[in-house]
Image (cartoon, helix red, strand yellow):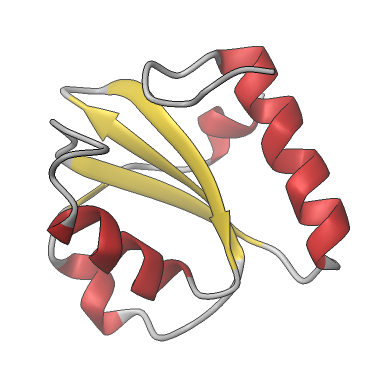
Length: 92
């Protein structure tokens, strides 16, 4: 699936990437723990770094850049969450 196409990056590297939208994946010791989407992944990763109460214990991330409408992006995110069932995502 999609995670085979991306390599997790170590923390702190995201600050040099610039702003772009897409789906991002947070990992802890190589295990997927959270999937999210954002119009600006770089800023969103910064929020996750600062918010230790919600998403604990992640040490690397991966992302897929997209250029799709917000509604479509939410649909993709939900399908990925349902498929992978990450520890910190709430499933519907």
